[in-house]
Image (cartoon, rainbow, N blue to C red; front, side, top):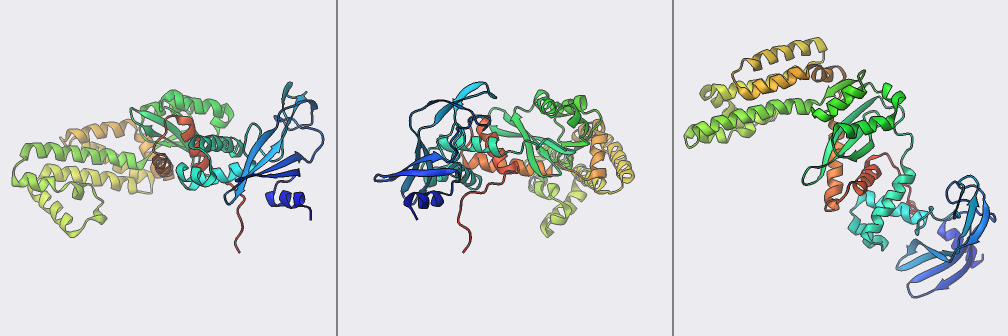
Length: 409
């Protein structure tokens, strides 16, 4: 077997011939040419007439230990009648307008999925900025162009990626469990841009949207999707009651601070906010003491638990009746935080009740946000949205990479 044939098979790149080999101290430079004779357009990939030839260019390939491998070739420029432009020809070993081979970029993106960029730069021998550019190119190639087709149930949420109110809006497909869209800001116009990209026909197919009670998102959905059902996330609904309970507790604590009763109330915060089945013996004892000594706090605790029980019902009519009873009780409870909470839930009553019918929550969206937060932390933050959005698509957009790795032995 000839050396050039051996090298071509070792590199694993089809449609390529190795014509020359050159060694240096840490580099192996291979002179290569495409297998096809007629050049192909770098844009559309169709055959085109040769225009002229460029200077020699090198592409970085996967190395062997400490040995860097370069592919050297002088690409031709072509005059493509379909693109109506003069552009550099397509080569079989690398994406268009990249100085790295496809295998090199695939492995780099795969490593970026599972570890931080600092380790990727050390393993691949490239800079931090280069890793980000490779990730953006791989996402542009591998992201499913049909990801917005067939959407029925979506979840919408915001993610804070930097201080001073820098946010991303993320849209998640509940059925396929992946992120399908992301953009900077969290306004009504931001979500409106998603509906513009979706188009009228695909918007008509949407059946429900899960979200928190952010006014901008509600406004955009009510305007663009009047037929879709808004489902407010159960966690955020119950959090309204938990925050109201804590506000009542803090108000009481300010009144009796410095007394023995105030000390006991200060230590009861977690007993009041935890689920009943998670309470230990000492916390149950604290609740029993509060029932005897502080009726206002205990009434606020019962209001919090009653709302959770109302949302536990599986039958919509029972949940509707329980929610209306809870609203009446909270409105006349003489506890201002709960009166305010009751006003909010009454305003969004249909969206709160819709959870009981479909049992959809924003849990999957919050899960992706936690994964995105981990990505941002291991990168020590992002200065701008595009690199973060590229990493979000790479890790949560349903992209499956197949890097050139050896199989199990």
